[in-house]
Length: 472
Ligand code: NAD
Image (tube, rainbow, N blue to C red):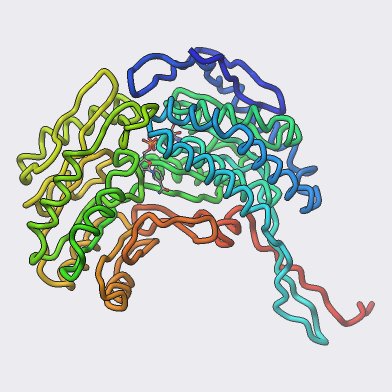
């Protein structure tokens, strides 16, 4: 059992109320008990962030930059501990957790370079007009369990550098790395600038309807995104919603099947399929369909699934019992919709599922039409490019999509017809701090990362100064 890690509210660690048990998904053992926030803890966190805001807003940019760099240093100096915590609570292999921690530090360093020089849109004899980016106030971040540390950090970095204060509410099943991160930075940020709450799934609505919260940045399911939008509407909060995805990969028949199968496999099953932007629907052109299915099946059957702490593990468990049950139900249904050519097996203790592939399947069932957040993927056959584009776009989601071909020009032209926030060619899930990512349709509103993402933590203020002397 880990030593208890508390919430951070106004610079002090607080224990909270009823304990929340955090479970290791690789063996179902309780690894920590954290005190859950009461509604009054949540109110205190927002009030602390509100009180801290004017001073943080007026802190020179150079000091805010230094603060972000010191936070990044703290992440780097404690990278091993944070990596182990991410694996322990989330289940992913240590090497993937290490990448998550490194990326968190990289995102902090990227946003530390942010520039807020005003944009001059008019400067003549009549007036000078400048557009400034101003902070919004208190930002609430609510996150999912698949990247438990990184998600909070990539919301915190732009929020803080822009001059906002911050309240983070991680997922109830993976709060530990966020709590430890906030404990590590408690002496780096002024009291109240960053606060973190633990909950049992009940505190979100208090935050999203709170009149002193200016913006909610949310990553999670589309259903919860809709609830948040409703809850935030009364007080007209700004929203960034990063929601579910059902990404298509379109594989044209001129590819090197073996090489592309390896890449597609890795990008479909990364984090045991629990990635919003992983490949979920694999569309393969008919001439190479059988060969591609065979190659993917070999990889899936050979995949090493186990405890993320073991060096040989390629894929860890599902993160929680609820998700495990959902995926087991889909595994049972799968033979009704197509032919299971690899995997199909789930076991415990822990929440393990062998990478599973279904071929000879088409749209019109849960496996293809819904977001499958686990290691279960469909391989669909198509004849023409137009057909593939139409079927890829038939989803209500629009997060990412990719096209695979030796003919990069053709693939790029096909990719540009896909209804998705990110369109990739001969790769997938290629996210980076300087490239915006976000969804269209039911995958969300707004973007994270890059200058566009930064601006979502600000509003545009026009400062317009008359040149003529004031006449009385
Ligand atoms: P979820 O929507 O169940 O929960 C996400 C967070 O919202 C948790 O912290 C939860 O406690 C909180 N929450 C739940 N109900 C709430 C409410 N009514 N008001 C406010 N907060 C509430 O999602 P999950 O199961 O944790 O994560 C999986 C989902 O997240 C998948 O659909 C996945 O695609 C999506 N996701 C999207 C992205 C992206 O960037 N687009 C990234 C990762 C995950």
